[in-house]
Length: 223
Image 1 (spheres, rainbow, N blue to C red):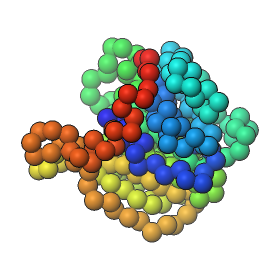
Image 2 (cartoon, one colour):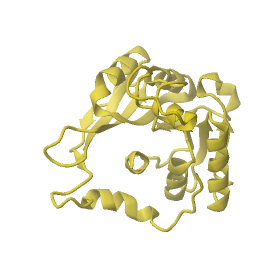
Image 3 (cartoon, rainbow, N blue to C red):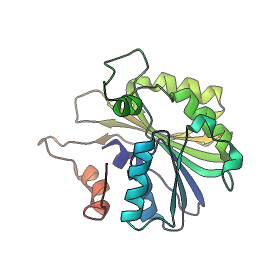
Image 4 (cartoon, one colour):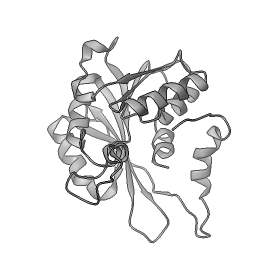
């Protein structure tokens, strides 16, 4: 769900290059490659098995000429490993602090959910290093960790371009925050009206279904 919501908020018109940090099985790269066929996309994934799934998904869906997967810790990736700095970075990063919640005994799931190899501060640090000037970072993150996002943005010289709170349904606290932040820039900050995943009738909302519809029955996925 988070991946679909994040991808729906990425605007890459007239952009050349995009990095997906923590690409997992590659679902965000596939969605964005379908929407932006001229975009050069690189997915960075630390886990070998997941990067293998991503490569298979890309091949099975015919995007091998548009998406490249790098099996590497993003903290060790240097700018000279890329053809040029990225116009856009996207990430659906680990969202639980190391010492909070139950650590999943499955190491693959634990790394994806807990900040074991990558935390929010490192996301902004890597983005400062790998983005072009005024490049954009798109994230989806727990809404209750907005202070952590703000602290990391200030430390690494990012400013909010837009934010949007995501609610399961009306009357409940927000679950997620979609953020677009600009590197070394001070764009006007827009707060987009909230997204509700479910309607009052306990069905997916029309807006959420609209986000999903372009990808229905189009992808063959492994992992």
